[in-house]
Image (cartoon, rainbow, N blue to C red; front, top):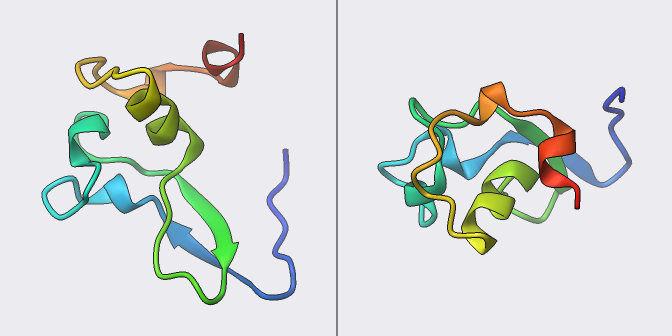
Length: 75
């Protein structure tokens, strides 16, 4: 899926790119998250869908999510 910018949005890194400073760092993959996403221009940061999924399923010891596909997150 191609990412396209929408008016009123900005591209940011997942806040788990630096797990040491992230509120949700315990759910970051090994080495930090490399996802980017578009968020509202009035927001400062965001958590990607993969890290969000890991936080709600308490998957904090799952290794890197770079090995996963989007199918791993759909039920």
